[in-house]
Length: 485
Image 1 (cartoon, one colour):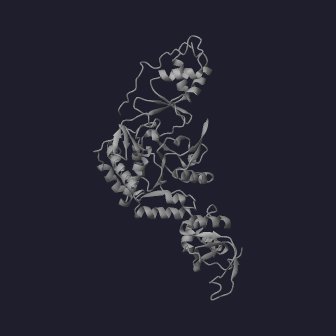
Image 2 (cartoon, helix red, strand yellow):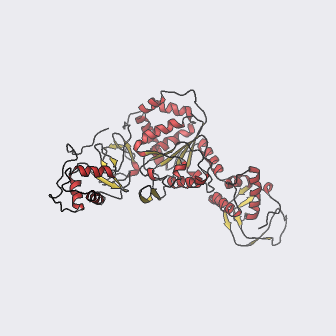
Image 3 (tube, rainbow, N blue to C red):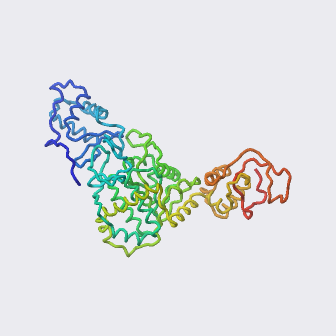
């Protein structure tokens, strides 16, 4: 890692004269004197102090450490005789010119001329790689990075052991998707609103892929969290500067937290503005977390999401073979040596992703995603089995008839109490699951001719109020006396 050129005092801190023996300076004046004398720039962002280091990025600095540093600039307590004066200086340092309180990680602090978009930037140990131009530039504290990975960019590096490993653990149709996901994760871009699920056999390769992705991202910018913690009050606190968020073992979360966990996952993957509650710190409003979620599980967690919004966002990778007892104990070291080459492989995937503007998903991935959508939406499973979706205005189905068929289907499927819905929730779930296919709900009362009950009937028909439009019930799922309100 190349050191950055900052003027350094030897030693630091040095003694500072803050304005004469009686120090009549204001805290603001003292803060300016301290800031000017300090060789390394300070940054205040999201209620935390950061100090630039000699490598060209920013280290988090505890307020107590900064207070101690200020005290050491006045060892005899000639000018700063009380702790209150130091606290007042800290408050002034938060707003002193040149310290930007609104800065967030992976943004420009001081934007250079012709600065590239932060979404194009990939951090390496030896610089900042611009995915749009293919150029590597020097690390700079004008860009808000709180660390860099250990690997260094090398345009000529290759990764034969990595490619051999992927060929053993994943079906080839998954490879382009994974390549694009790696490249996407190395940037702070979240515009494609996706998350990855690595699901399947234990000792099947999921952990190795996770470890490599963590190393490419770098220790400072990766986080690991359980579903239960993600759903907790302070679950988002540690994720504000993470490009990679790992959920390492997504066993089913507690029932009381499951809905919250799903909503948090949808919000993070959807790049929504969130309020981040932090323990013993002010709440951060309207924060878009830069992290991409990668979830590992032996089987997919039992989420309920009848909108299918979560399933649509998932890139599902299935691992079908276990290598338990046949592990290559040298593989970790081989892949660590190939990190620059794996980074090049990921960058190629990112280029393809940027050109196509969507992820390449093969037949295996599409099938896995469809199964996830069915598992997460009982309403979609019901519709797939029991309904004919046409999207046509002339096709309609009274809600009582649809719900009677649903209750009979739910009995046959042995749906749990958590999965079963009352009539009103059922109506909302069906619309959420089928809206994109042209199905809608109408409440105005009409006369409806039931072709099953009244073959050839040409009268005015039965009075129907709530009904689905654009869908029909398959005859074999008809329940008698199903028009009761």
